[in-house]
Picture 1: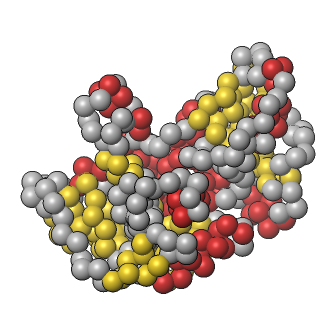
Picture 2: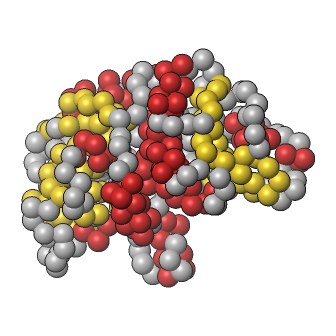
Length: 323
């Protein structure tokens, strides 16, 4: 069995197929999308603490179930997202905020992920994917889709939404916003004409470089690019009472900015992880709205190339590894 263990670069390893423990399932990986968070883990921005197999946008088929597992069953297609476990007993879990669990497990970070042929998962934190028959197209929904969905909920019900950084999450969220009848204002890295053309093709109302002024006041802005310098720019673009949501797990330092950008009850928020309820709501919406992902397929052995291409911005949409 071939797995990819974290290194710099990732190193191919051969290991026996893992066996699930109580409450776990083993999943044969059909596809695993590549997320910017994987880059942060591999590059050391997020220290994993020990060698770990990256990958948390996993689609696969259950092939072995552990003791006590009733669902999912062998043969079912499931998704395995970033939140791989929550304790269920801390104050956050009891309050319904399992994304803030004090003793969590994260797929591809604190537990082995999907850059592999097989992966073990907590059965209770897998997501049934009935009706999602294309593993490659579905894989980016497991994080780019889910974190975008949660970020949009935190952004509120405003009509004019700014998206800073037009990668995998923004290309999904633009479709969500258009289907909901919202306006999308897309900001890309300066001079990135390919990303700007992609945003326009998906229905964005306005597209330009991230250092340009928006032609309207935004109700909310969501920052997907891990660049702290975008925070003051986004605050300057939203109206009084507007919201700026930071959608990444890692961001460079936010520079000092004048208080007037935050004044008038503007709100600066961050998104942390996701909940299983987020996943259920989003996949029901995605099926109804016909959300489509743009993917670039790499064989598992080319994971380092996929990471390099993501780092350099050489494609639009999402990279997906296929064993």
